[in-house]
Length: 311
Image (cartoon, rainbow, N blue to C red; front, top):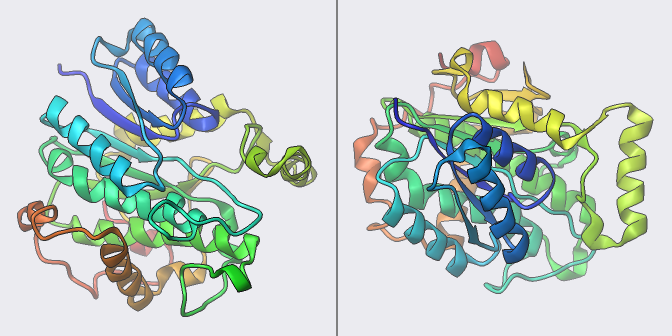
């Protein structure tokens, strides 16, 4: 039996690091994307020692930099003729407005657009696998997103909470829209939220911001260790019990209902078209879509996860 080939973003810390090692321990070749070379190279060595095979590797990638995303995708597709799992895990929250190298609001660029671009660029290899699984890590914070005309926050009206919430809502809507487009193929797309995790998330905003983040989850009694959260992610990625499930939302490993806004199919289509424009995806880069049956826009119901998830 061939080893599964798994790609995971945000692999150098927190859930990503724990999930990468868990995947390697289960015999997968793991391609780890992250921003820290020294940490990433050491992690790749450890993954190979854990049983991840000699093809487990680290590729330095900043998801907010579309040039780096394209470079990583080229390297991955040159090394592997199929991908069995893609875990869009990297995420960040920024307390003040920052712009990416492409001139876009950083939270939206890193949390959503970078993963949108990476997924589209790797889709041909995912469709070459017997039954690829695409997992996009969101957050319960997506339920706090308010409806609005502009997905990308502006400098003069920047709201850190809405910037993060809207980017996480985009994650869920992307996972659902992708699941619809994958109908007719063996590949699946799902969204998940891991709950509060005792990791370095929010440390980029300073020590106090990080402590407030951890404290909020401690008060709600939903704080877990990265290894615990990672096991739920890896289960969705590899376990036979989740085979064929698509268009679903999982909270802490259990199927759940996402926010009402996430079921807005018209807004999801607007987000998809916006994402195509913002990432400058070309027709050639999207050529593999011909392998998938036409999308049925009316196939998704808003009545809840049982009606929505395709099995």
